[in-house]
Amino acid sequence: MEQNIKDIISVQSGEKATRLMQTENKISVVVSKSSNRVSIRKEIEKIFDVKVDKINIINKMSGERIAIIKLKPESNAMDLATKLGVV
Image 1 (spheres, helix red, strand yellow):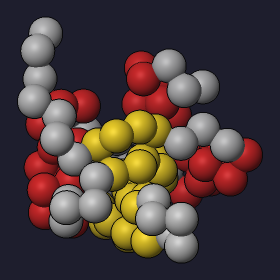
Image 2 (cartoon, helix red, strand yellow):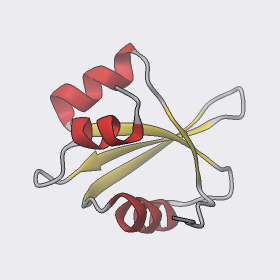
Image 3 (cartoon, rainbow, N blue to C red):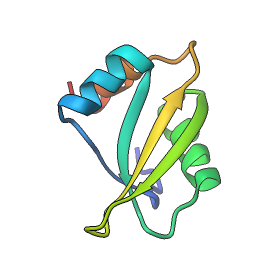
Image 4 (cartoon, one colour):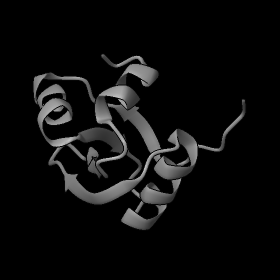
């Protein structure tokens, strides 16, 4: 199952990321610096077969770029995290 993943680097799995998954149906991923909301949305929806509602991007002072992705109610962030092996 070869897939061309160019924007997503890794999935975050800390306390805050887990709380966001459980309470707000959001998942946090580290993305490349050249990615934008449209490319992240297309990649997430295509690869993981979920529906994205909204994307917020955070640029940290360390140079890391994090996308917090809110999924639509029919998609579950905890199920996606379990499939990815984060939880």
